[in-house]
Length: 338
Image: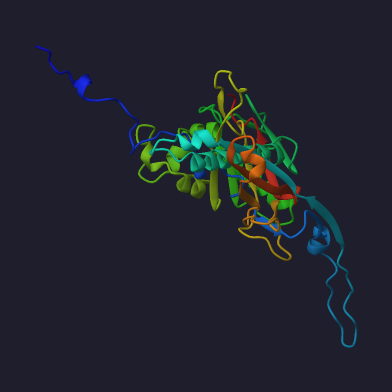
């Protein structure tokens, strides 16, 4: 007599309450968190820059005798420009594919999410090459195996837990930037994921944490606490990951950003007579663009149906990342050795 088995009474089918995707958390990306986003109407324009030396010059103020005029001074101006390039990526959806789609899937939404994720990775890479790179900022130091002294433009690599002094290094770098920039102290600090992982285990950092945290008690080591230790309002970590292998080649993942440290003076928003180390000029007058210059578009029509494409989704970003005040930033290249 035949005996029923579990496989005989059930045919496998996709779950309707579970799909797995790999979309990075927005907190991994820092490109829109460091510098103000300046919304612009045109793809290119200029902006004025007041002369810093004139603002801070001493020696012109004099005591006024009765009926005598004060000394005259003038304001000096220069200008610079931006050009917002438009970047884009798109994905087609075939008629037959959508018609055969399982209930658990929403391929259109998944496609749009994938496009945005890829665009954010592209923008993060541009942030790294524009701002988080060697020889960009007015103060540019190097991490080395053994720095000679605390006056050189070098620091001992922070992963040398015996000899390095990251808190003293940052304090010295902030003081240098503040002096060079005419009085503007860095208020934001950016490090790569690798550097952050070194800092949370550094004896100098652990010694400053309330309760005497140790490597075995890492819960006390938050980014907010590290910001407090270094004396900045924001401590941001570049945690975005990119796969730089070609289609069909084995995946090759790495963190975007390298092993560096950046300190900048940057306001939360841009405005008139506002000093800032950098800015992102977002061209948001393109139809459908958000304040960040991001556009998500859907295209349908006979010209697509002719080749059996039901819909094509396109994501665009229009922006220009600019260093607007090089002296308002300090950078340590290769602050860790690996």
